[in-house]
Length: 182
View 1: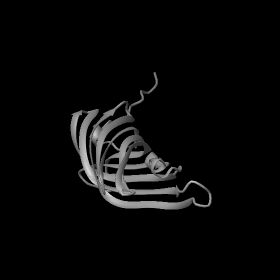
View 2 (view 1 turned 60 degrees about the vertical axis):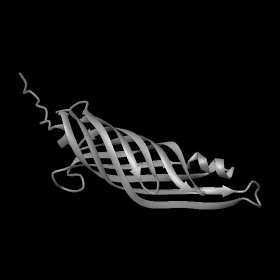
View 3 (view 1 turned 180 degrees about the vertical axis):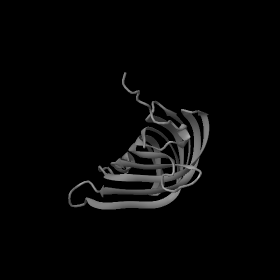
């Protein structure tokens, strides 16, 4: 007989660090062109969750870095020309966990969010009158979340959450992540 292989000790999900890919649907809102415009946008990125991520202590954290490549459609509608650019949202939230079992938990948290967007806009309809403009926006705000996390196997987990962003404007988002423990 051969030696039995032992699985590593499995900590509760609230004490396990995870990192992985994230998808978010955010009702992106910004004050521009004299009004508040909004559009539901798909944003992709990375999510890291668990204890001792950037700061050691008796708490857990979520770190999210999300990017959207392209400009919201309301710029094209307003200017009559295509627009391009990107949106970056990065946040770090302190979490409070409610264990449901060793493999599932509810959580909520809050923390700072950094927002940066850069769009290339064009005005005018013909080559001699067409002018290009650069629209950049950078600010700090706060983000709040409420979610559910579950462990799929010894190493894999999933998370789903609702988020409320509070910057120059306020907007909602929903996100899901597939993560691997590290």
